[in-house]
Every structure is written in C-alpha cells, then in structure tokens.
Image 1 (tube, helix red, strand yellow):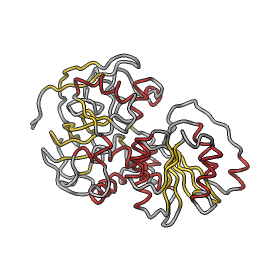
Image 2 (cartoon, rainbow, N blue to C red):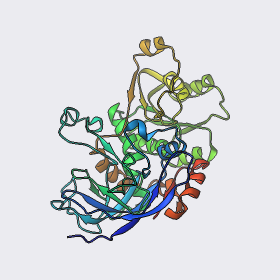
Image 3 (cartoon, helix red, strand yellow):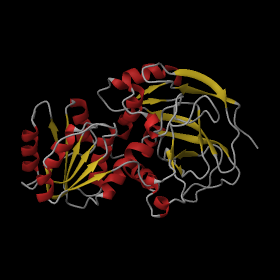
Length: 372
C-alpha cells in the first residue's frame, strides 16, 4: 500500500550549458523489491560538474537527456516495495530508516557479478542515466526522491553518523577505500595522494587508518593542503612552490628515505598527473588511477621506467557494493577524530541548484551540497 506523496520535485538537466529546471512530477508507484528514497542530502561531486560542463558525457555511458544528475547522497525510506524488509546486512528497514546505497545497480547474475566483480557488471545501470521526462522521473539525486530499483544494495546509516557526514560514503569514500584495497596497501608503506579534493582527503584518512607510515599530499590550493593535514597527511607539497615534477619527485624521495612511494593515488583528474605519479613510485610501487574519467584524453610516459621499476597501475571505476558497508563503519569510528563535516560545508536548496553549481565550479574548498 502506498504511503508516499503523489508529487515531488526534480532538477531536470536538459543539456550541458543550460540551466537546471525545477519540475514537479508524479511519484511513481513503488513496485516489488523497489524502495522510494526521500533524499536528505546530495553532494555536488566532481563528475556532476563535469557532466554539467559536458566534459563527462553521460550519453557515452548509455545515458539519455533530459536526466537528473546527482549520485552522492543519503536519504530515508519513504516507501518499501513488496518483499523488502531488510538492508544488505540483514538490518530491518522501515519507513523513516536512514540509508545509503551505491548509485550503480548490478544484475548479480552475469559473469562478472558471479566472479565477485560487481562493479564491472555486464548489465550495469546507474543513477543519472535515466530519462527525467518519463516514469520513474526520480533517476538522480537532485530531487525530493530517488527510486531504488529492485535488487539494489542498501545499507542502514548508523544513528551516530549525521547526514552531512554520511552523504559522501557512497561515492568518494567508498571509491578510494576500494582503490587502496585493490592494491593491498600495507602497514608501514609510503603513500602519496595527488589531489586534495574530497576523494584525496578521504584517501589520506583511509591510508592512515590502514597503517601507512607516511602519507604525502600534493595540491596547489592552500585551503585544501590545510585540510589534508587535518585529515592526517604527514607532509604536503604545494605545486605553486615546488613548481616542477622533478622538484616534487625529489621531495617525495627525501620524505621516503630515498625509496619513493609504495602507493600513489591519482584523484586530480588530469592526464598530466599520471606520468608524474609514476615517477614518484619506488620499486614495486602501485599506482591507483581514479580521477581521469573524461574519455579521449591521453598522456606520454617512458615505459622503460615502468618496466624496470616493476610498477603496477590499477584503474579503479566504481567499487564493490560491499565496500559501502565498511565505509559506514569507518565514518562511525573516525567521525570524532577527523573533520568530515568540512567536506560539504556549503548547503543549497533544490531551488538554488543553478547557484550551487556555479559556486561548486569555482570552489576552492571541497564540496557543496543540495538539501532539498
């Protein structure tokens, strides 16, 4: 039986360069296995800004326009479809339960899903790719509601973790956790993080929690470098002061007993960072490539350094959905030790989304959030 309202608002995204339009649309009937989410908070992630500019084309992923952007979100259950009683950990769900969920949806039955590679699902579906002008309308986070499809993985947010901290779990935090798990970052290793935006700050925190001997952050914005130190960076390198890659490589060598980094995480999102990052690695170093999502960009590098250094590069897209549960545990354990609340310090109403994106595009701190 339906308990939800009959209409809600979405911020319709028609095309790059065009303003968002606020539409009031029907709330769809919630089918078996589906969950209607009342969105409490949706952050403006870098990929949302790229889509807004048109440099990250959702159409290239099978998406359609108009759509609803937004994916890094937290909300509460507004209505449960038939057969849904618990989250993925077996905790009971009810109307009002606060939840987070991966913004991509796996079939759980294809070759990759069955092999434990659900983020490479051959039938993958994702928020921001559906149409905003036909049911179910609520296909992205920038709206009053979001409709979770049947079979979606969902986790209950611990009562101790507020919305402003939980909102970043299902994208930025889970992504870097998964990346560091993929390269098996070990206790006592040296880690360099290229970029101190939201993903970079989470990467710093997670690397320290995994026992890194030293974490070094590289960025060119003073405010972000200050945040990097607050999130646990043992040293920071300001690219406006150390202006060449040779200078930065020398600093990293000095900070790592001449060895170079064991792990470098790239979350700058510019191909030029990759060649430099590979130079920062020591023998058997592992490079975690996360940031470059714009198709068609290239870079040049000397492969002999890669070969003779026994180096490894791992591309990381999305994450295994189970990582999100560990991300929530991480937030619950570290929320009073690290300033997570600073990651989304600017809030805008849904009606002010155009102003929010304009501000996010030029922000020198980390994240802005839409709070419907």
